[in-house]
Length: 473
Image 1 (cartoon, rainbow, N blue to C red):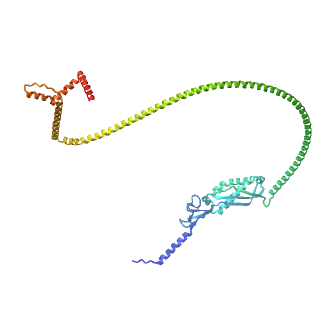
Image 2: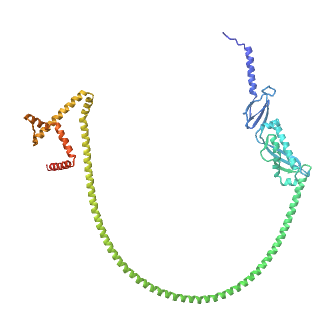
Image 3: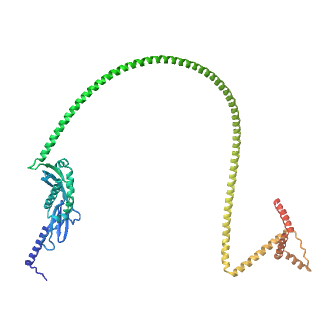
């Protein structure tokens, strides 16, 4: 199915869309870096540019008559701008006319407030010009012209304070103080010229008075200086005469004092020589005395040193003997210690050997009984075999007992007295003597006998005798 396109209808639509796009793009605005644009759309106001609370730097400036999209734009520069007020006529408090030049510097601090006051920056500058002129007029009208000319610098600060509150209402702030650049006469006035001439004449008068006063003071100074010079000359002549008399007097006094001092020094010299002789005699006697004392002390020291040397010699010999004794003692102790260590090592070797033998024996015994343990485990589970083994062991024990009894009987000197009616009965009784029951009875009898005091002594005596016999054997 094919769709037929009616280009007669589509082409005008496309052309209209392209035209709309071109128109919209033509309304696109990019705010320069040194400007701020205040855009009002209906009740809303937006700022575009490099300011606080900015919506960016791009917007679309639709005409104000376009419904919903229409906007009105107010453009301001964000750079500092200056306002010059040249040749502004003003009056002082005495209504004397004069002309001033004023220069001021401002910047827009609140573009929204400024846009509410004016529609362009040119209009804003006109309004600020009127504000500065009014402030200058109101302040200067309260001052005297002489004061204004003499204290011109303070009025810039006064102008700035006067307009600060008004500038806030216009969204503007002063960058620096407003400056009062120049003051001069208006075209129809010579007030300032007359003031300057008056000041000039006054300066000339004061200058001449100063020159005359300085000349008078110079003449007076010359007279005073000459007078002082004359007085100084007279004082110098008088001082020279007094000085000469004083010198002569001092010379005579000095000569007499010199003679007296020479005599006194001669007397002192003689006394000192006598004192020196006495001191030398005393020192000679003292030296002799000290020499005798030193000699006596030297003899005494020689005797003491000889005695100390003898004592030291005896002490040294004593120490030598002590050291020899200690050396011998140390040698004996070392030998004893070596023997003790050897004995200990030998005992440790024997002990280790005994332990090794005991361990080997224990292992051997365990190996021997291992079969018995295994046999015991098997026998324990078979009662018939247990009874068979018990009977076998009994037979072996009785056989061993019989063999040993026979050996003992063969070696023993035994006499048995058996009483019986027949020979067979006597032999039977004699045989019963070596039966196990009679052996147990004899053993019990000996145990009971050895438990008594007499039996214990007898047993101990027999034991001692047997032990001595064994030792001899």
